Length: 297
Image (tube, rainbow, N blue to C red; front, side, top):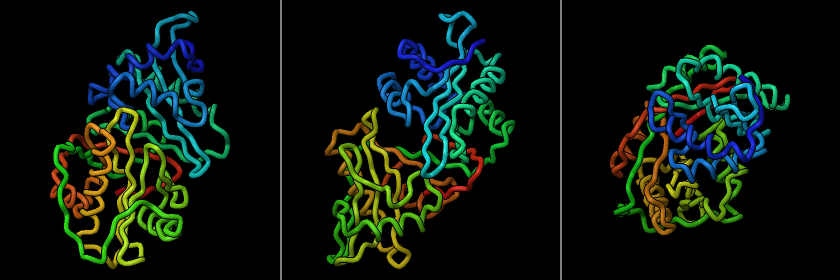
C-alpha cells in the first residue's frame, strides 16, 4: 500500500468510491455529499489546497487500484481540521488503510492546527471505532432534518419586526449574538458573511437586532440552514420561525431542490420549532472532536 497526495487523474475514482460509500449508513461521512457532480465540486473547494491537498491510498504500483481516500479541510481560525473521511474501498482492510491515511494526514497539518473533527452517521461503527482509537471524544449527536420547498410557511410577527439581509451596521450585534449562542463554532461571528451562494438574514425590532439566520445554496443545489439565533429577550415570540421561513423563501427563489440542517439531538426547543415547520429527521449524525468542545444548534 502507498499513501500519496491526490492527483486530478484520481478524481473520477475517488468520486465513485465516495458516492458508493455515502449510500450506505455504515460508511456515511457527515460532511460529504452524495451525488457525483457535487462531490467533485466539493473536493475541489475544500481549503486550503483543494484536490491537491487530499490523500489517497493505492496499491503499491503507481497506477494501482484505489484503496481509500481522506479529505483535508483546515483553517487557522478556528485552528481546526475537518476530516472528510476516511473512505475505504474494502471493509476487510478498513482499519489498516484508515489508520495509514490518518497518520499521513496529521503529518500534512501545520503546528497551528490544534483541533480535529469528524462527523458520521450514528449507524457507522467503523468511524466510531476509528475515532475512539485515535483519542477523539464523542460529542452529543445531531439530528439531520430535511424539508421540501413546495410550500413556504407564513409566520406572522409583530408590526415592528422586520427581516432583511445583513447590513454593515448589524455586524457587531450579529457577531456578539453568534459567538454567545455558538461558542467555538466552525465560523466565528465576525466571519459571518453573504455571497453569491450565502445569505445572512437579520430580524430587527425597530432598529435593534433581535436574531439572524445564515443560509446557503450548496454545491448540490440543496439549501442549508447553518445557524439560527434569537436574543434571549425575544425568544418565544415567533422570531425564529419567521427567520426560518425567510430562509426557506430565499432558497426557493434560488432554485434549491430542498433544505436541510442539523440540530442537537437533545435540543427539544429547536427540534419542536423545526417540527412545526414540517422538517423531517433523516439521520442522527455523531461528531467526534479533539482539542475543543463546540456548541451546536
